Image 1 (cartoon, one colour):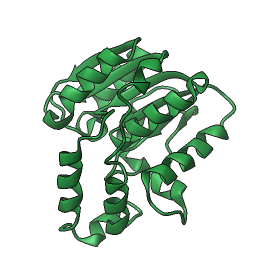
Image 2: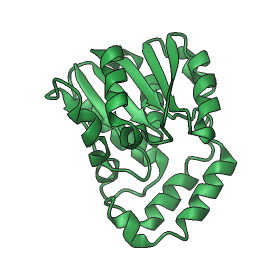
Image 3: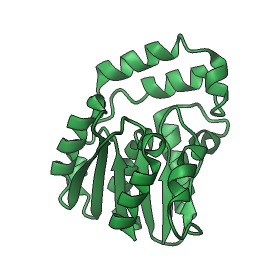
Image 4: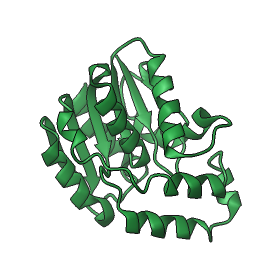
Length: 205
């Protein structure tokens, strides 16, 4: 069994360090850097998903995917397309039908952030803007009903933008449970890493 931790937009693989530090056995944990997976390909969601799929396909064992935000979208998409590969699923602050207004606001905000802030994440501003725009039409509303593995949907109680969608998604997936994390916003792996680790151990180990 391999545990794949997939970071969100505005993060990189190091965003999981504190959470993972509270877990026991970590030799089975993988945490890819999504922008490195893209290599020289155009930074669209479709290319990123194909690169992520290729990454998981190289793993011979069953996988558990823990994804946050963008990582949760990739995890959903992969599980829908490859249900036999995924043993369990943890979706943190997920969206299954992209909120067009929020995405528009997000990439407009990106325009005013210095490019140096994006380079710290191993990317640049144009990559973030193009990737965000390319996700606008994503809609897994009906497809998620086919996910049959045990699924945990998590959301911080202060994450107003994603809480309702998270609750609805948990109701759509047959074997899903929803859990709200107190004292956390959107980035559970940064806001409450120890609490997140405790929840993961309870659900997965």
